[in-house]
Image 1: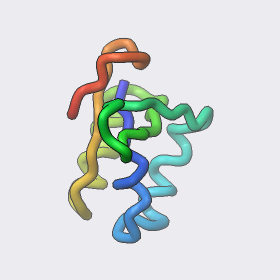
Image 2: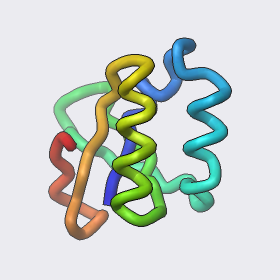
Image 3: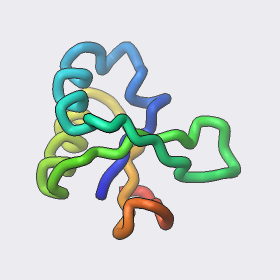
Image 4: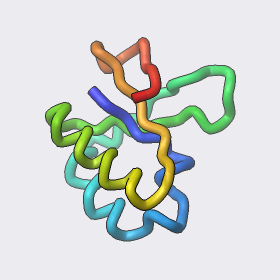
Length: 81
């Protein structure tokens, strides 16, 4: 399971193309905290197959840096992807 950092995702450089890619795979708009020690640690969970999530992350990273996280359970243990 993957998640994208909300602060990074809201950068103007991503804009509409990012919204078009991310919106269909975030129907419940579930947020997680990836690091309790930082202010911008909120991330939105990508509710799709891992291969699809990785493809979305790879495409977004072509445009600009974006923090992505991975967790085996989807609840805890988020680490940088």
